[in-house]
Length: 332
Image 1: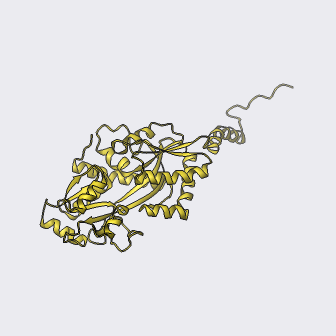
Image 2 (image 1 turned 60 degrees about the vertical axis):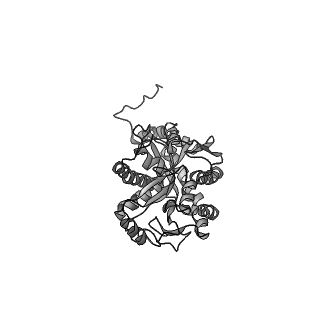
Image 3 (image 1 turned 180 degrees about the vertical axis):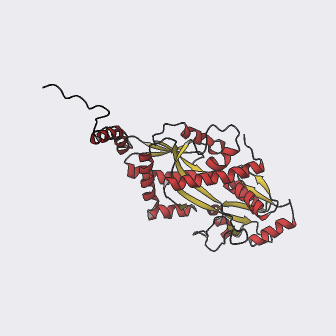
């Protein structure tokens, strides 16, 4: 018996076509099912011990338990987090190397550096928004300010004289202060320090009257009477300090600034791998002990889909890039 010839392209059956298509898809599916086959890294663009590093380590521990593989945190500090971002952008698109990104690394500083070696949107695949924290507006207790309206009125009565302290150009506290001044139509001058700790000390000492900073960095000083809290910067009240109004409800409708933290992989990472990490991260962020630990840092777990994080990333880039251009902010 003569061997049966292969069907021609014009006579091949639909069933045969489906078999061929399945054969082509099978290798990619098998690869995703086998992931992870080795340790996973979460790169942090800042020194150990800070908020970004801490949330990265919290998420890494939980993901490691679910992956059955080590998830290690690697600190590559420098250049406002852009060194770490470039490293991840240039890494293989396989999900084994991610960055715990912030709006500093992926929505503000990219527009302050004319020769940035990566695109904050095009070169990354959003995985999950891990968490966010609100800032607290504080003033030196000797200031005649107990509300947002008081602060705006004082700034208007002393145009160009009021300043606010911040630990770094392009940081969330810096941009929050700039947005506050713009929306309130007042002049407030940023005073830059090498780190938040030095900035807080000068506000406590009365050398600079105002500051916007992570809520947990202020609680002890407020309780000790060294600082006076005015309002939180998020759209909703904080679950940690619920008695403080938001800036929006206290006088500047629409004001909303938070520090966010999210996992990004290199662009081109397989969708199945992104979905796997997203699923396990959402499970981890729903654990009571994880939520309680993050709350001690002033961080509210978020979670959600990669698409939701992508939408936030795009909106934040549109928002802050315009402000960076308007203020002509630059960094080396």
